[in-house]
Image (cartoon, rainbow, N blue to C red; front, side, top):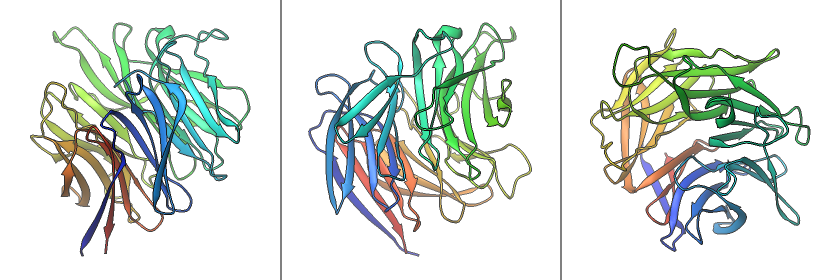
Amino acid sequence: MTTDFLTETVDGDGEVLGQTSLVVDGNGNPAVAYVVNRPVGNVRVARRLNGTWTSEDTGGQTTQGVSLVSLGIDAQDVPHIAYRDRSSDSAIFASRGPGGWSFEEIPTQAGLEVRGTTEVSMRLDSDGVPSVAFRDDFTGERMAVATRDGTSSPWEVATLEKIGETGFVKLPSLAFDLSETPRVAFIDEFNEGQVEINEQAIRLSQKSVDGWQEVSEILDKTVRQVRWLSLAQRTSAKYVIAYCEAAHGNLSALLSTFDSTGPLTEIVAPGIVIAGNSNPRPSAAVDLLSRPSIAYVDDGELKLATRSAPGSWTIQPIGPAVDWPSLAYDSTGNAHIAYSTGNLMYTKVTNQ
């Protein structure tokens, strides 16, 4: 098997802050939402059509480095984004119409009055209906999920429980499975009085016909100093979660796959650089063969890890990178990755 790489500069002004979110539309064309420092925290969307990248400012502004600016493209080729607003801290959902971008605030558990949020994560289902997970600061920093019955129906907000009243939640990652069920993975940080530093758990909640699981499933209660977490989209298995722990310097995957009966943790890459502002920010996806894959940054280099066998990962170095990789596969099995070097970069990985 040979591998071909196509690497392109999408935005080359050198002021890209990152926070990239890449999706592939129904025709196999990549699109990226990202943040630039022009003037401060502007949200942009770039699309590659007929071999050429074009980008536009949406008019939205977000807080630098807090979370991804989530992107989705529906079956009518309409892009939608979600992010945390820079001035109000509200969760914002926006869509691109014929006359430009339209914006709306997503309600929190405060009710009609919108309150502060952090760490927003959004996906669209196959009908273009959004689900948005975020940390709801009004409810004592609990995880919340806003969903709709249709594209224009009112938002319904559910709050997920955490382990203890003294801890908090962070790093939500929302994705749909193959049955169109939305799920959210997140970190629950708590302190049971046994250690001086907070303990952490990876939790997973999903929506059923009766609503969201208020008490989320605990997948792993032994993780420490998790810097980033990513739940793969539309997996045939129950979940594929990539995360990195500063406490151990490991990039790991938490899996429930065809060859595992329950939560299975595998070290994907030990000893990666996680120090200071360095953050591998793993982005999880599955390829056409349902193999878990993770794009991440290690010591200034973008890498793509693919699970070749249980407990075994093949790692492909791709090129220089600083931060914010985002991975997705198209319908023919090509991997698409957006990332930041100060410029917005794009790589297409084709296996032949």
